[in-house]
Image (tube, rainbow, N blue to C red):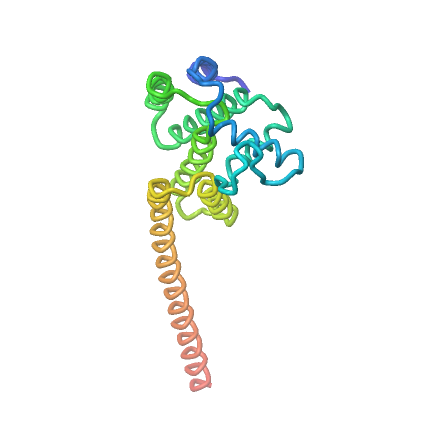
Length: 232
């Protein structure tokens, strides 16, 4: 299959965006550690080593939600460098955002916005190694992509779409169960619920119309049979 010049140009531009996102991720300003990140790293190592969800950094019984340390501990089985963890999930979040933008906007706007968002974050945000923001960024990016994909698919929704959505909502809440995050989550959830209600109403109307049509057909068939019997 021979690719056209237009397809090759698009592929080259997408590769350029990919490399740009990788470059920005590597160059993002980052603080090595903070009191909170040291706590998260300690909790993650305890989970990875099987010690349990125990705080041996501050020796406190007040523990943060388990979502972020759980994600860090899973990554630490591959690489236990908190800076690598943070940059890896920021990069994944950038890619997910690009896919989300591609679903909603035409090609030109996809490229422009994909360049703009990392630049804004580069100038405005200082990240912390193993900070909770990287996990929130990743999970909420996935959540937005899932909701946008469900909306764009119309009625062709599968059960696994709802399962993925539910898992992401749950994981987002156990990372940082705060009010503004819950309010942000309420927006895509409401959209999905409203769309489903509409689909259910359409399905009910369709089923009712099918039943009425079948009833009319049966009545017509019975009437034909009666007329034949009377003529015989």
